[in-house]
Image (cartoon, rainbow, N blue to C red; front, side):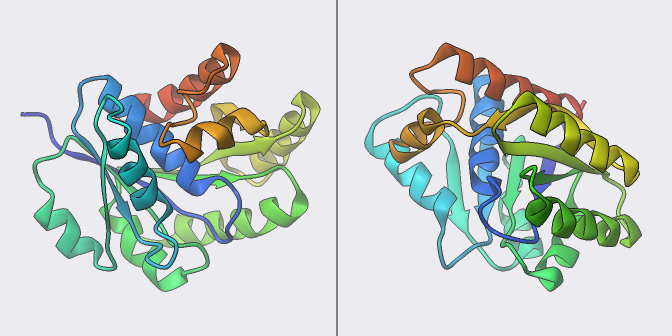
Length: 210
């Protein structure tokens, strides 16, 4: 049996596409035949839990599971039967992030391209780099991107800081929000070009798991 893989998706602030990215990863892992589950640490909003509930109500395939939690060690112990676990970290929670990082095989930091997004996310990446962990990362995932030039500038800034940006990005389009409202992931929109972009990013993440 293949060893379970844990992906931590964490951010310093909200609004950078963290839960959208978690849902995309879980759905694409499930499409590969993996049993995927999201552990939602943002217990106030529970965006991923609500998304899965909407997905179940609409009988969407493949199935993805989610549950709210505050205790990463306990939750991982109770969810040994899954192939891929995605940790949807609560934004702005340094203590919880420090608890999540050692449990991860891969750490992904979603960020927008603005200075307001990049500066705190780079600061978080530097802190994570000092934490003891055996997993890969932190790796950056570009989300809510408006233009190719904006993406290029963000990639250059991240590289200058000594970090790597994953291939692909989620651009800012209403189609992604509309899909999410109906329990669909960023790769299940009504627009093939948006789906292809989302799958490219998800593939870049899942390929890092080996």
